[in-house]
Image 1 (cartoon, one colour):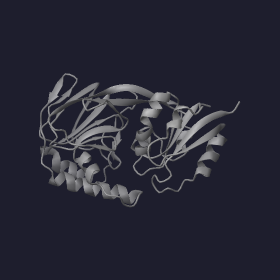
Image 2 (cartoon, one colour):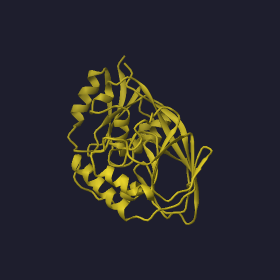
Image 3 (cartoon, rainbow, N blue to C red):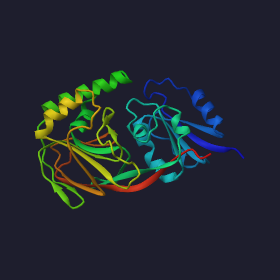
Image 4 (cartoon, rainbow, N blue to C red):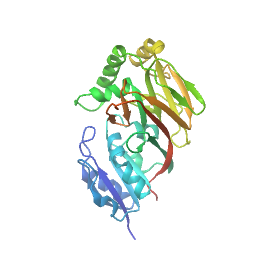
Length: 284
């Protein structure tokens, strides 16, 4: 009996040069019948009722984030085909080319959960405060590919150079950090922002969150790294924790994956931890 795979395709992701026909041919070669679902806005409701043995997400990080609630609800194996620009999640999993995701050995990928806003919010890449979140807020549409990444890194440098520090109370398990921060990134994967390797040792399936911070005193060092070759690990504070708590007063920007969060009316305590795990695999 033929197996079925839901193919969710964001045709405008990245350079947009992978057609439905190309994707479906490759999926059929792996022994699956593709059930094509174009993603132009919110995922269609019928995703929950389509018969399937796996889900294939063809797009960028934003496509994966949009699909996350549906993936968690279906609890099916997921194959990731990176067609976006940064592809932070795919890179962190070792998926470097569009069809690697159809052939990679199965592995797990943690899903984080942020609590403290109006409703719990899952995340797969990172949650962050400060300059990278501010970059998301100000980032304009433009060319894709390496040009977009370079533009994003330049814009991040400008954001970082101009911003005032913020002083949240940051609790990582039992450790408390109270510094003048410019960047706080709570990562589930190694890459974030415009394809920056902020947590080189991150394991997306270890049940922990990796925390990377840049303080006011470390601004010049991080700017030099950002504008250099970025082959060495970035300068900053690094920690690993199962639970991260932050008192957010709205004086700095907050993002959840690629979503910018509006400022709250007053201080909000947010908490992040690992909640679920997805199986990243196209079973043979």
